[in-house]
Length: 145
Image (cartoon, rainbow, N blue to C red; front, side, top):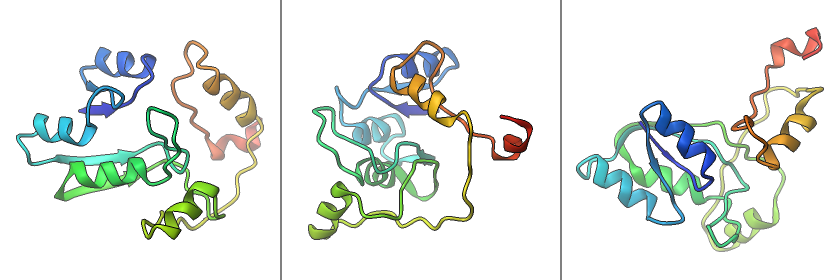
């Protein structure tokens, strides 16, 4: 298992369970995955960032992680996404469309009304200890979650 991330807390956590951590601010992540897989690419991959993806220098590129994922997974592999790709046109997505690079189009299935999400994302954004990823459980919404 491999992960690509540049925030030190998440690679440390991944390495603690045996994953190979790739810091995309230091190396080309696609080449690193190809090197680890003898040039074949990963069997499977998951995009977990979404439209707010950005280069290490801060330049926003909505299609960055998805394009890197496609380039690093073998052609017979599978790709999933949990990253957020909103249907509205974001400024970065509009720039990509003008350059012919496109963006992911995601159809909304239902609307969640999470009560604790704003607080959880505030902790996540501040990189508070223990807030590696926010997971919302819609089935628990009626139970006060």
